[in-house]
Length: 128
Image (cartoon, rainbow, N blue to C red; front, side, top):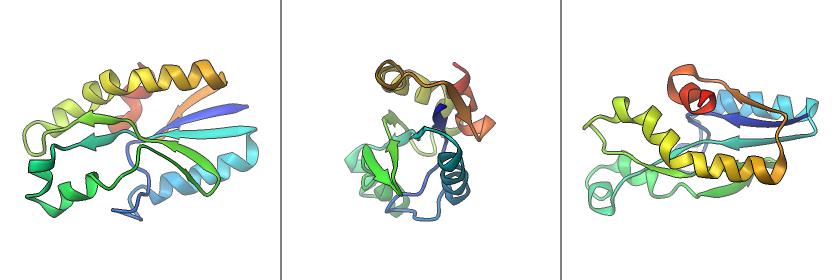
């Protein structure tokens, strides 16, 4: 079984424990499946705004693609304006900006299933 896991958070250098439970679940699935890949949208914050707040600055250090513990992790950016509608825009915004990456991954690897761990943060993206 080839599995694409869509999560709202996954560990990265700025926050090594963000989404640690998602990573543990993915590692467990990797032992059961032929192949597992992760799609974790990352917020894109303009550099000017990122220089103002340390939390937003960590978003600029997240790499778009990496291999973490042998699992390919894809982090396409989506526009995110902190404090000005982040909760409203995260689901449709992530979908609109990440669907191209998800389609390309599926075309290239032909996943058997798409799994989402978080209904509120990434469930809409996985459902669409």
